[in-house]
Image 1 (spheres, rainbow, N blue to C red):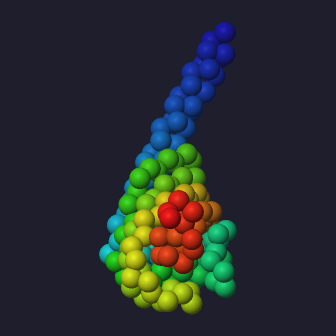
Image 2 (image 1 turned 135 degrees about the vertical axis):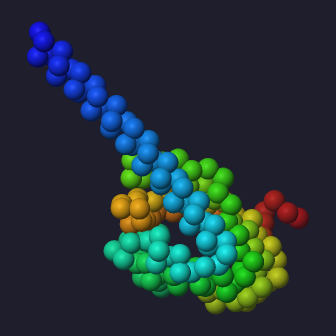
Length: 164
């Protein structure tokens, strides 16, 4: 009986430690997201090397860009060229273990060419959803979707059926 109680006590302590560890990891990963967004809002592309592992895999790579950390840099460079006043706002972050779900709003004014599209001078406000995996304090994988249809409508490059 004493052995059983001792084992149950050890398991309970280990479980609490695991829960505390998971909560700390989630908190660290949420802070990682905010620090990265803060740096990108300063258009500091060196943040990509700092926050993304060299073996990073981009599962939602832009057409023609490699699914790597270098491809991510190219994508941000293209976006900043097209939207030099780009700003991202973190709306929600949910972290569980090594995964982080992020809801962002990106804004900017299309003042430059981007991926073959001429500047329109129009402003955008786009919702984005991202899922990232973190290991050793760096992003190692990413999946994401952006509301590209709304962006194209806001830029006047696609009809908006809601407007007449």
